[in-house]
Length: 163
Image 1: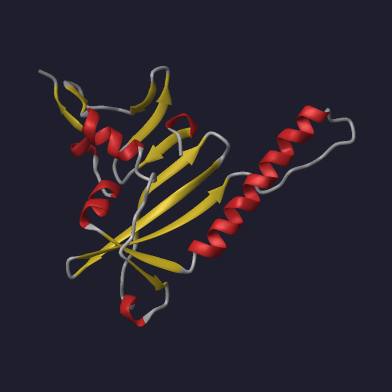
Image 2: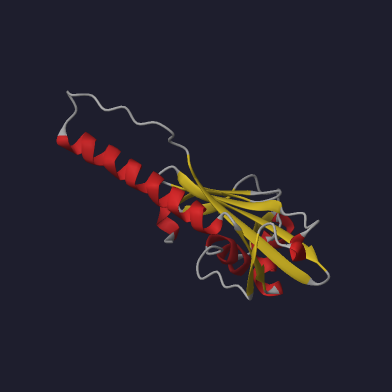
C-alpha cells in the first residue's frame, strides 16, 4: 500500500498522522527528531508481510497465546488494518484484521453520477475488507523476529535527540 493512501498509524504509544509534509510523528517530545529509518519501517509495515507458518486461530499450538494489538493503520478511504502480535518461547505470532469505518451507505434518487460512483467505491472497498477478513480472520501467522520487531516499534524507537 502506498504511503499516500495512509491517513494515520497508531502504535502502542505513538501516532503518526498525515501532515503537510506527509506522515509525521505526532506529539514528539521537545528536543527530539524522527529517526528516518525507523519511521520508514512503521510507514511501510504492512508492505510485503512474510510469514513462516500458518495456524488456524483455534489450533492447539496456539492455546493460551495472548495476541495484543500493536498497530492500527487507517487509510484515507476510511478502511484500515489492525495487527496483533504475541511472543512465546522465542517465536512471534501475528494476526491481522481489516475494518471499514463506513457501516451504511444511503442512496438518494437526486444524487449525481459522481456521488453514486463514490458510494459504489465505498461499498466495493467494504466488500474487499469483508473478503480479506473471511480469509485472514481465522489464521494466525508465525513471523520472523525482524517482522515482529518492525510491527512492535515504540515511540522511543522512532525518535532521537536533536544534535
